[in-house]
Image (cartoon, rainbow, N blue to C red; front, side, top):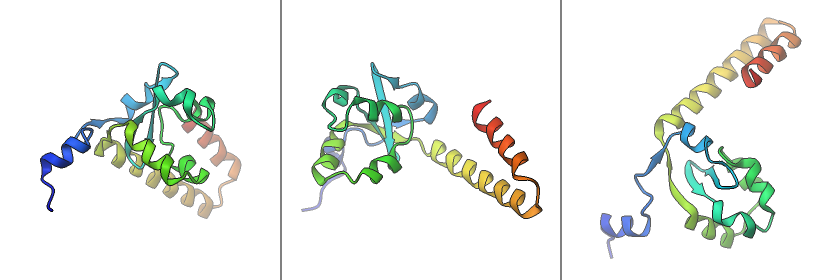
Length: 133
């Protein structure tokens, strides 16, 4: 049986609902806890108290990409299936491209610094200002 586009939308009503990273980052507190997993946006606000690993684990990742942490834990198939019920949308393609561009530039700069023989201290100071200022 071939599924129509309507069947897919009924089962996944979040399809086509895009959120930019700036919007997701606002949902980083206990009243509204959103995370990104594999470029999908999850609203875990109602799941905080039920999470087997504790509320704090989710709140630490709130407003950002938790894909690496999620995969590192090794969640079960049941946990993965349950997580699908909390999807509210997808990360906007522009946010994905900006993130990829950022890391490309970051790695390019890092390689240039290391190859040029500049002291690592100068590079570390630059990183500090990039992330904390």
